[in-house]
Length: 101
Image (cartoon, rainbow, N blue to C red):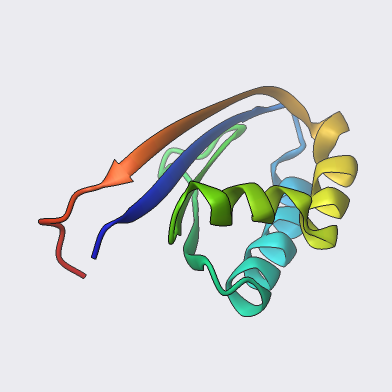
């Protein structure tokens, strides 16, 4: 199953992790539940802790990801989390045809 994946790395302001995880959890749940093109949305927390959160998201294609960025739930997350983020990096990926579920 080919697809389109996004890896987002967030470096958060000191003390922001707990609130950020609450906000992104709502966004992730709505994405998987309400967006037909969103196949997976994982929130990754480093074992060593710290002010970092990564996201791993798989969509049917780049258009499904673009649609995700326009949803009301993403816009709410973006607005509410902006003050918590120090740095954000988004990497776009193709999912290999050889990848197994």
